[in-house]
Length: 199
Image 1 (cartoon, rainbow, N blue to C red):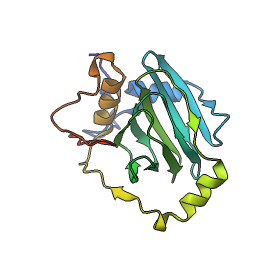
Image 2 (cartoon, rainbow, N blue to C red):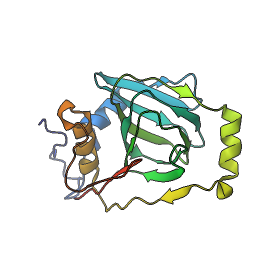
Image 3 (cartoon, rainbow, N blue to C red):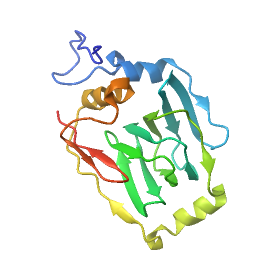
Image 4 (cartoon, rainbow, N blue to C red):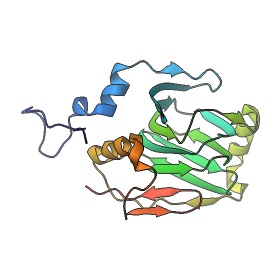
């Protein structure tokens, strides 16, 4: 497996810290221009691999993805920021922060709100497509009355992880041979895979 993080000799770098310029995914984001997602305001994306389709995606704080679904399931790892995902098919919602991993099944209808500027790595099981199941104004209205939405909030059981662990996981997700068989520490349920990351 290729080296993802390399400790560069930097006297200012504290022991155990990570030099962000040395990680592969950080360099992808830093050195590439993300293209605006025309159909969803506040979003931008850069395809980094065609098969399986993988991308770095960013959304500005306050952005909303109206309810939608895809032909293929997808994995994602949050690299920066935070967001909430409502899986309308499962009547469940997930608060995701840096280091969190979420798998969404093909066809599951989901809506997303971004609480702060957020970036994530995403890999689809096939081609990327999107089918909207509601208008933007309907999504915003539903989010505003969230307290009465009847969705169960699923809490991720995560432990602290260094960014190197998160990026190593993203690299594994990106690799063909992974095929969703991560490790014994992976917890699977029908609508989410929560991964416990270790230092």
